[in-house]
Image 1: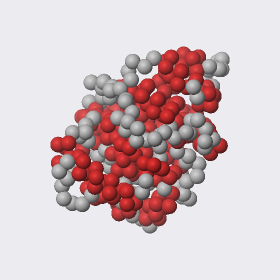
Image 2: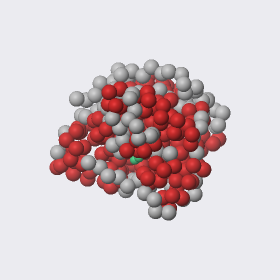
Image 3: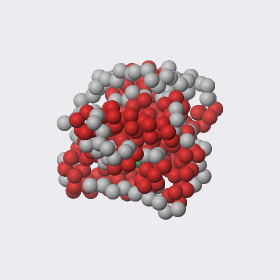
Image 4: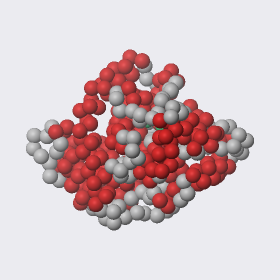
Length: 347
Ligand SMILES: [Fe+2]
Ligand SMILES: [Fe+2]
């Protein structure tokens, strides 16, 4: 992120969390955010680490020179994950005449991109178990929302060429990371948020008043995990892409995909989205007729994918609870710097 941009307030949620004095630098802004969230959610970084397999997968997906063989190798080193990917490949959604039994064959028949999506979705659902969530919250609905935004963002990146499709897919998958963390790791604090929204307080006001802005919390964890800045920004700016100091196009893709997912029936129910559609269309260089046609395709295809996504989430969650000390669940020290390859954007 460019430090200069942080000379002015970035997004309302961030400025509400911080004091009203303008931060002089990115570091100052971040230390204020840290202080606020650290107060509400102590030890967030220690409590939530990213499994090593997820780091490896992210690294592979961010590298445009990655070959299918390399994805195959990562999955083969994690037999349980590989078995799930194969099982999902054989679901009715893919309509295979002959069942696949190896990762190599799944990549060949279903395609590298689909396998990427599956592996990331499974990995995330294994990291965060949303089967036990505070009463009144729909954990599966949150997963379906994240997966649909991820899928839409990837397709939108392909037609607009505004961002690399894999980058858009991962940004979409991670955009509600803050909510996922709150729900799965801080249920008591999330319960307070639910009580306020149940009492009629708008979601964004409720989270700001509690110092629990989901964009900031997700951003802090993504930064702690040392994820590429484009993902950190996608999380922090998914409701305010205009303020994004870096890859505006990717933040805009996530924002528009978020809105399309809501319209298609896969919302993050607590949020009421307000988007600047003309700005989004201009930034993504997409015409109204193209967007309309795209939305129609999305509405028709998302329900078809839903059963396989539910299967993905449920198998991930079951494994997490069964295999707390398993190899995939072995937590890595999140402070260890990771070297993610830089990826070119489509434009
Ligand atoms: Fe959000
Ligand atoms: Fe969302």
